[in-house]
Image 1 (tube, rainbow, N blue to C red):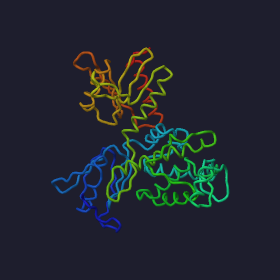
Image 2 (cartoon, rainbow, N blue to C red; image 1 turned 30 degrees about the vertical axis):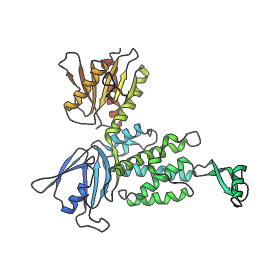
Image 3 (tube, one colour; image 1 turned 180 degrees about the vertical axis):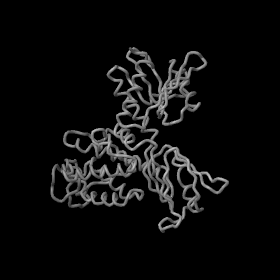
Image 4 (spheres, rainbow, N blue to C red; image 1 turned 180 degrees about the horizontal axis):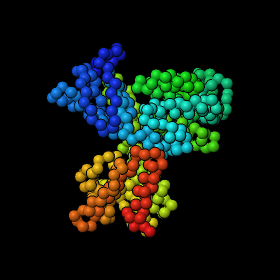
Length: 406
């Protein structure tokens, strides 16, 4: 394994590198910095040393920030900040809670924007008063409290312990919602890729969570929190916490020596965004949209296929669709072959590739004379309204052309 130089001391060859997703740049770097660059996972950036001595750096579809050794890497989205916030708001149920999207431009980093918004939400909750709830507890006590467990108390006395075993309800801050918020605050504090002033504020806010248990990041499950009228005001902060912890989890899973990071997977975000918007728009027409539905590829079930989306009209006509977070004018041949396989297995004559861009739709009439594959881009470069209109136009095509509904 390549050992990174000690980054605890300041290095004269420290590199702050800004690059957009899918962008390729070339830089002249020192040998020590090159070793640090090689520590980044290939899913983040790909590194190639060129014959002329320059180092070629190519970003992939992860957006965010990571620091390894003396390299501070920032990967910016190819879409605008308002567009990215629109996607995040839709995929994480934050539509009503994020600031006015029109107020943001290209200047803020998405990482800092999400952290800042989360800290603001937590500060608001703290000022309002963190929610307490009754939690079932059991403990060995000297005075009796709550319900006495006779059997277990007798066992204690047999061991010459002057205690009684009690079960009681504790009115406490140590409830799942507060545990998730504290876990996120501590993750922010420990992440050196986040601005010092944000980490300082997170440290200050964490003092309000005295007595609350911190969870391992991998154990955080928002689905296990039951929301009601008493804790519904927690939901915006918890949804932001989910984004932050998931993004830090991606960085941690990518590893690296002395690494700290925060990444958004744009491929996954785009897929979920398209699914949610199409499902919402097409539902009133009786059209169902299912995501990631597996089906047999062969009769014996040795292999499976799994289109991103299966769209079905009320009368049963189906359409297979895949989302491709790519801006190329033409789809990759492998994407076309994959969609053709979906159509053949499902016994349908039309498939749909949903890409990113402002180009015109493109139709591929397969030489079998039966199957056609439509490639339709979604415009992510405009305002939030433009993005939603682009999805509405796509939904109209699906309903009237793809599914042949009136």
